[in-house]
Length: 575
Image (cartoon, rainbow, N blue to C red; front, side, top):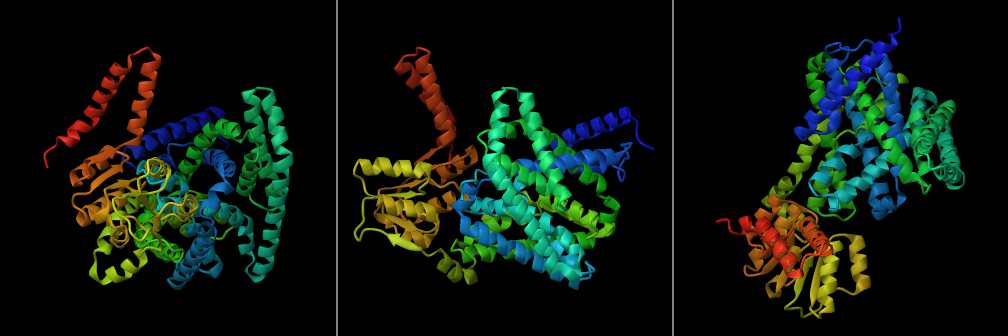
């Protein structure tokens, strides 16, 4: 018997209110908010306290969450971002996805966790995807989105998100093991034709449609058009035998070519976030804590299999592309969880009968656990790298990896300034110093930045700035100063430590992201430590005070007082 309308509204209110509470609690515990949504679903669902009258209606609404998630992903997807590290993004992600699928399929089949190789391949596909949401949030909180390992991880994640569309397209082919090759070719052909049609419509039709709607200056009409486009394309792909999720992603790609893409995304984001919370809560409703408890050994084994095997697969891939030991280890620890879009793939596979109910429940639980552990592994990676670099048996091998890849330094270099990092901050420092005629030497481990250094004619060393082998090539003992403009806090700390060991009296300055780093670096011996966001706030405040009529001397006095109050406590602290 169908639930009454008022019962459905009550169920919806229960889910949204508990999801908000669960998300808040997860945030306070420094966990992904989606984990809070999942746990709230466990608590109020049929296998928890049974607070819902008709969970199936909530799951039906949750499908909209999936569609809007993938639609927003399509709108935000940028080929320009992928081009920055295109080689490792494309080739590396293919190696990672293929390697994970092969390892998982083999291990689960040998251990008897899967009954057929097609089921093993599907499980491998589910486990091969990582969490863009969790990784991006954690990198942002740690100030590591601009680091080399952060850029590599995000590039691979973008490629994984793109691969999800192809996985959803070929998923039905796994139902026909005897005709798998033909089915895969047919599915791939359908997907290619749909993508081609989307590119044509996205270039010539959708932008004109969005411009016409935007010209009405009606926010409601723009929102309705965006929703209709998302769900309409999703319905079209479903009628062709492809998935609704893939259609929503393609609709997002079509809108992304429009000048109104940002407006459309802004309108859809509140709906996406609301329905996404329903989606993750509905996942929680399906998790059976009793089944997980009864199969705790298998769940623990799956968690270890996923996190360890993905890390072991990613680590040599990153090394293969010429990156350092620390970068490879940090990247491996960053993307070794299971992603939120794995839920999408898992739900679709369960509907097609590719996994039984027990395997489905175990995979749901495994995914939730890896999401919880992911921020912990990301935080521990730099410390693990430092310890391994000091481990005697590994030192020769690591030293070989950290040797400079390219050196462009004058034969006799002295009384120079060593600048670590050639990003926005480092580039500005170098420009000012060279304009005044001072010799500089840049340390950089980004290939794109090194290409720019070659074009600018700036002396450089291509390698990890924190490596002692790299530092020895800089003649740091003959340098007058060291300016550290690295985005990675752990590399900044290591570089300062090694530099002051080689040149104890060196005038070293650095930029930091938060107060804890500032305290640490000043106590280590840095002569000046600057927090760019704080200094930017001071300059903006000075401009406003000037516009408000304050005298220049009074403005400088006020700004200096604020600056001193920010840094004095640290500078005056006893050793």
